[in-house]
Amino acid sequence: MWPEQFEFLLSLVHPLLEKHSMRAPLSPRLRLSLTLTYLAQGESMRTKHLEFRVGKSTVCKIIPEVCRAIWLVLQPVVLPTLDADGWKRISEQYMLKWQFPNCIGALDGRHMEIEKPPCSGSQYHNYKRFFSMVLLALCDANHKFTWVDIGQFGSISDGGVWRNSELASDLASGDADIPAPTPLPGRDVPFPHVIVADEAFPLNTYLMRPYARRNYCPPDWLDVEDEAGLIHDGRWRTIGPGAFFKELGRTGANRGGSESEGVRNYLKQYFVSPVGEAQAPWQYVTAFQGQIINPRA
Image 1 (cartoon, helix red, strand yellow):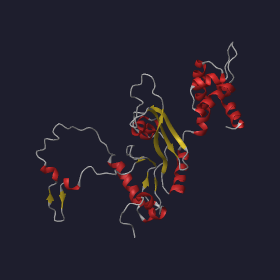
Image 2 (cartoon, helix red, strand yellow):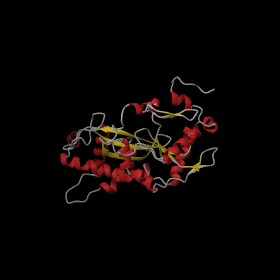
Image 3 (tube, one colour):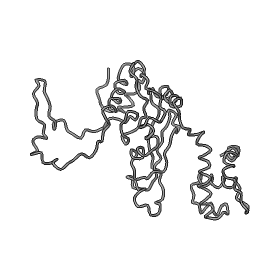
Image 4 (cartoon, helix red, strand yellow):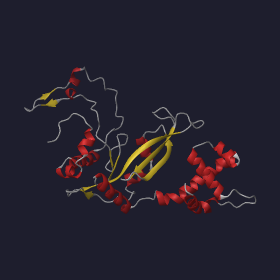
């Protein structure tokens, strides 16, 4: 950090860090310097206690206070709450840079490795077999964060973290100030603005995830109808009486609703239409990545 940047940040947080007491308090400059050094170097608080000659308990109190002050002064500038115009600008950026219409962000999560907190059990232990907290972020077309959720347990999946987040709640209730649906280029049907994510997230009208990459049910297991209208039994009928599923009740859906699937199918049909292919001619090479398929003429 350049000295000018440090002085500018100090001017912002100074009112929040200034202390008034009978004893001479530590200056805001020292508090900010200690915290920034700790954040930049990733060392323990004990080393900062020795380096700055400040009590251990004081260091443990200063760092959270300064981090909170930095967030309060910079969040409105760096991560402001987006309104309809802000979402619209992001959508225009995605169309210009990535040829994806009506997209307002790309969503993904990352596990930030930590030491196991005392008495935490398996709350922070993730499927990758280390302890972590989850950083969930939404990015614009230039890979810049537009929204973040930090600190949920590492044992929770990305989809679970998203479900617990404030943005997901606002989108579901319609309080996120998302622009009204607008037609895709060359179409006249209003289409909602969407976020794109991977398979870890649920499909919704405002959240698009890829199609499943595998088919759990082999085709010959299903009943099929031939061209003459005759129905042929699938293999599932030959495995015996239907007692295998007698005690199996409904455990909940693992797929999006018909409206969500309709939105995704409409988007798929758009990208393989002449307008979509002309808009993003590189999509087939990127999607198939050298797989042996029947190429388009």
